[in-house]
Image 1 (tube, helix red, strand yellow):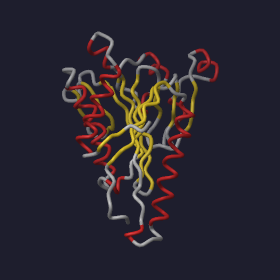
Image 2 (cartoon, rainbow, N blue to C red; image 1 turned 60 degrees about the vertical axis):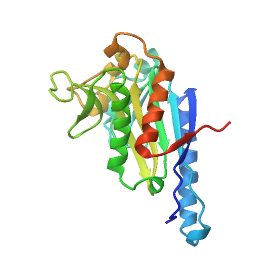
Image 3 (spheres, helix red, strand yellow; image 1 turned 180 degrees about the vertical axis):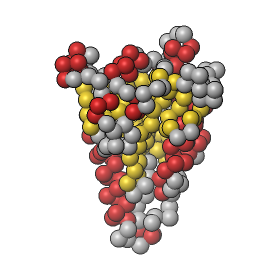
Length: 241
């Protein structure tokens, strides 16, 4: 294993981008990183190249995605229903069940070589959650975790009306990650009514703008998320031209 660690992360903001195009882009970066790690294993330590890290921020047009362990019956729309709602559906290679992406939702795809940070997938997931929790706290919204469930929740303590505000689903191979988190900022939560969100039938979904009673500046949220991710992972984000 390469003993040198690269904690710089190339930040890429794709704006509003088709899900499949973004998925293909992720797969390309992921495959390149894994290939370099395999190549490094054949070389003496001093000859091994540093692996790259990426963080992609994006919003998607309406889309439903089903993880490899998911149940397709959790999508409550047929082909005609998808068309009527201007949505598409993909089965993908992350963990987790079904989820929705759409405009007003900040989706983050970290493609990190965790050998550059720490090799603990549970800590990785908790750090993603913690960045969202800290961002919400800046808006006066108290959020946290529910035992046994991934993601970020409101009313996570009393659980009188627990509601998810951020979903997580990741893939990792050779400690390289892809997929990530979906944070509802100004999301149209009606679209969650067409699925059993993450396979959990008795929990609702919310969005930051609904909790605040006003629209939220997406660029402001992105800046806060970047800052918290940098602090938690001790990484340095940079943007290439």
